[in-house]
Length: 240
Image (cartoon, rainbow, N blue to C red; front, side):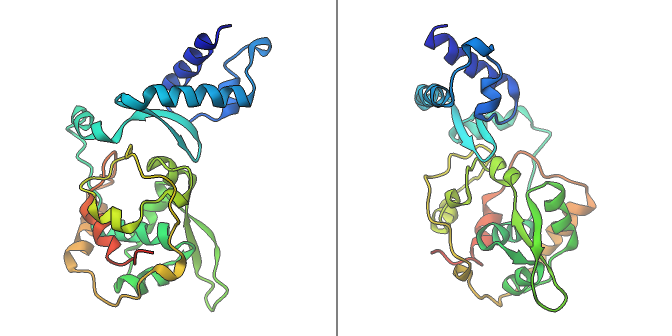
């Protein structure tokens, strides 16, 4: 079996899977006698990644494995194939998600303290249903509030392998659009818990109204995200 053939098999498997594949998954598509080692598979993936460097597709390594996806530069054009799905995220939801991602582990009460307003229960419910966040324990204080953190699905959705690859907040504010397949910068130190600014400024009523509208109309969250909401969330988080 030639090296080119093995590379084609790996590429075909990644395209056909429709999900991230780990090395063990890729190895299983080969017959026992022809099965490449993990080292050989990694070399094949590296070669494919280099081959895709100048194309509209890219080979991304996320928390759940490897996947082929549309490069972020072309996400806006490709999204026009689904004009009936103009998904928009409310600012309140984005603020909550950003605080969990950058401050975790964090309780709902701590989120409310930073944002200055009560967190709509439907926002936490939606994030849990999306499997972007999970309860990772309880705080050892009166009432034992639940502590929240992000999931592997959160990392996969935003094309991340680990939390350290979250974009620095200064760069986040400069974005005009953040998509599922955004090509994020290389690993950068994630802000420590103390990097969250102690803000008492109230979020305007419009942000909360957006969250209410979101839940009243169903679940409009899908393959898109408005950067302005995440930028608003960044106003509550200090850049390290």
